[in-house]
Structures are given as C-alpha cells and as structure tokens.
Image (cartoon, rainbow, N blue to C red; front, side, top):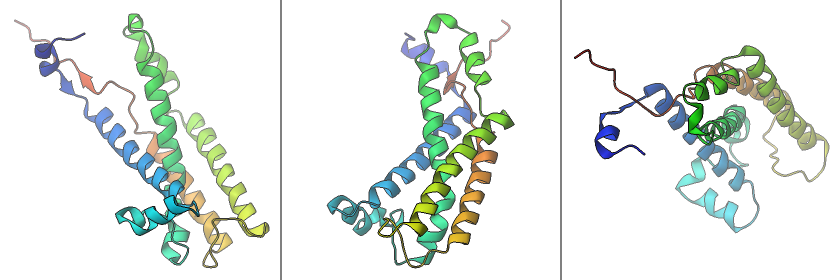
Amino acid sequence: MLCHRQMKNRRKNLGAVVSTGVCSVLVFVGFVRLISYSRGATGDFIRSSVLGVLGYNPDSFINVQFFKVLATPSLVALIYFYFRLRNASMPSHLGAIRFDRIHRLDFKSAVLRGILTSVITVHWLGMEWWKFNVDGFYPYSELEIRSLNIGVLLLSQALAFLGMKYLSFKPLLRDPPQSNE
C-alpha cells in the first residue's frame, strides 16, 4: 500500500486515463442501447428519459441506421476492460513484467485487432441476416436498409480496428521521474 504522500506525488498516465474514459463512455452507450431494445417497462423508461437519445427509436432513420457505427467499438471497449482488470489482478510480485505480459496481448497488433473486430462484425452481420430473413425479429424497423446496415457495420469495424491501436494498458498513475540529487 502506498501512503498518502506517495500517492500525491504520483502522476496520472494520460494515455491510460483517456483510454479508460473513452472505453467507459462506449460501454455505457452500448449498455443503454442494449437495455432500450427491451419491449418492457425498462426499455420504455430508457426511451422516454434523457437517455432516450442513446436508446433505440424505430421511428428515426438516423437512429436505426447510423447508431450501429458504435456497435463494434462498444464491444471492443468491454473487452478492453476485461483485459485491463485481468492485468490488475495479476500478482504484484511479477513487477515490471506484469505490463510486458499484457502488451503481448495488446491491441497494437494488427493481426489481433483484425481477428477481434472481424469476429465481432460477423456476429453483428449474423444478427442483420436474422433481422431481414426471420419474421417478427426484434428490433427491426421498416426504415432499415440491409445494404446500408452492412456498410455501417463495416465502418464500425474499421473504426474499432483503428481505435484499438491507441488503447493503453499502462497503470493510471505512474511514479514521478527520479531527481538526481
């Protein structure tokens, strides 16, 4: 445990703070969107509240078509938090290699990013297939266009692929530089 004075002297690691902040927002948006799909009182509450802007609205062309651009980044953000928590739960006696180990699983690898975003996008494309081929699939809106949905999901994959490269797994606080006294 660090005492208060040691904690006060530590600096924020800007990359890790920004990564955590952006991913927090994306996970929140994805969670609200998912809840808003329900047909019950919870979905109605979300759609009628201030959070309704983030919720599913089958009567809004922009909402049903272009909100999907956040689909893959939101799921990637959830996966980021899984790896971030996994790293934090590693025993501290690993010391410096703790972060080296997670960087081997890091999102900077184009192959890992490609596989992860492709698997997520195939999942979304499967849901689009069901949406247009199975009667009574919910959520579905008459305003949706299959080819546009697929294009937006591919754009979502590209955004997630590019954005993952900048996520940081470093600790939120870092020690200040040592002075040469």
